[in-house]
Image (cartoon, rainbow, N blue to C red; front, side, top):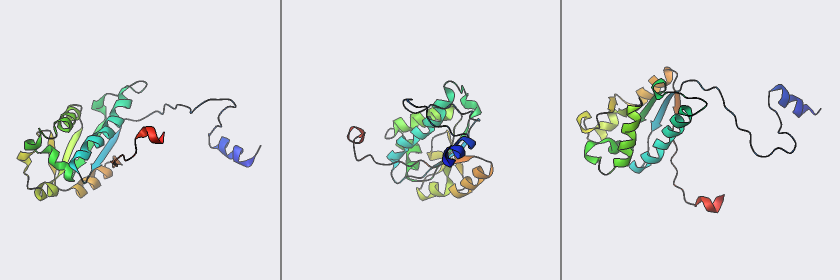
Length: 169
């Protein structure tokens, strides 16, 4: 048996069976998540695609075989870029879809935190923001705090698609 194959077997990595088709599907035993999403975008509209990252965490865990209830998922979204303007109550009509999605996630227990320093930079007060938002002293203190509490850090990357999927498949 070649050395590489012996190493793979020792590590618990199996080779696909001869004649097998496609990738194998795994069902890991996931623990209840403790996640901090760090939102810092150069355009407010990028909050829409970033919210899909939250959906990508919550929805699969709610489905079979995991069947996790969102109340057992500890999720914090830290907002400190231009997307902060989407949370200003006077901008709600302009960003209605994103606000509705954030409001829905807040009902599921997701915490939305805004950087107090960024809030000042934008000239807003806590009263200017949606009621489901909490204002923290600063994004940097929040990043350190939640990571010290054992939260996994996820920083969504929102790219602009320049090539249609049909062209690159």
